[in-house]
Length: 109
Image (cartoon, rainbow, N blue to C red; front, side):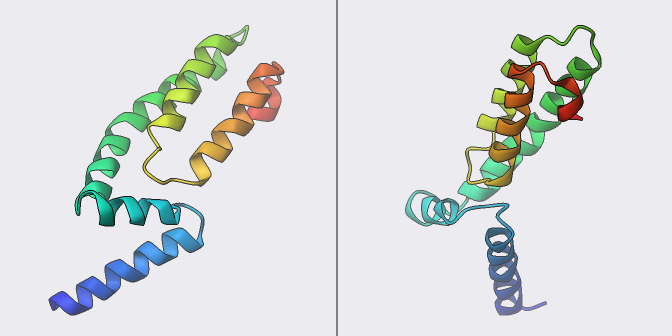
C-alpha cells in the first residue's frame, strides 16, 4: 500500500471514529497543535490501563454488598484515562456511577 493510500485510510478511520462518537473532534485538534503522536501515546496509555480498571470493576460488581466507594474510584479512573477524546466511555461510566450511587446493582449489569 502506498503512503497516500495509507494516509487516506487513516483519515477515513479517524472520521469514522468521530462519526460513531467514539472520539470527538477535540482529539484531532490537540494532536495537530501539540504533537503528531498524541493519539498514539494516549491510546497506548488507555490500552495499558483500562483492562485493569475493567477487571476490578467487574470483580467489585460481584461482591455483596456492593461497595460504591470502591466502584466509584475505579469507574472514575477508567473515565479519566479516557481524557484523550473518547466520547462514549465517559458517558457510559457516568450512567454506571449513577446506578452505583443509587445502589442499583441490577441496572449496572
